[in-house]
Length: 151
Image (cartoon, rainbow, N blue to C red; front, top):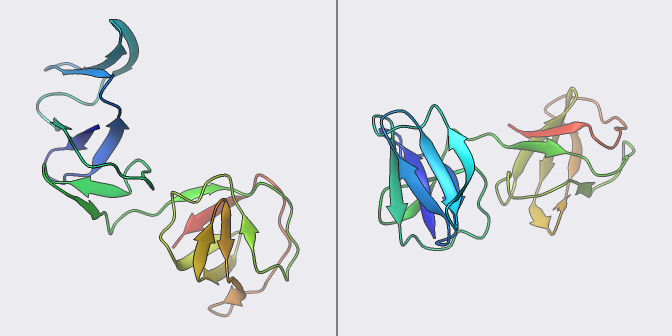
């Protein structure tokens, strides 16, 4: 595996398989496979990005969630993930269905609309053990597609 990190912060911007060819130049980064360019990134150049190869697998990877210093992964404590609900929920459910749990920490607090919700775990594509209406907010119903943001 390989990752492109932002110089100075070591924040991992992209996490790629070894089959991808990465060329970071003074004007752009090109990601290719089999000689065919798949992605050209204009704001990722030799002056502000570094490629690390042979990195350990990061199963819960999500862009900007982790840092890599060239030898190991660490959490990016400034990262606040967000993703959408996959179905409608009422104001009393204790499991929150999301598109993907990788943007979130193993437990914590999220916000949907004005409501803050604590959760104690993640399971597949669900935030589990949810306590609704925390921090003096009111529990409410939400619609599939509404944004869930880590706070």
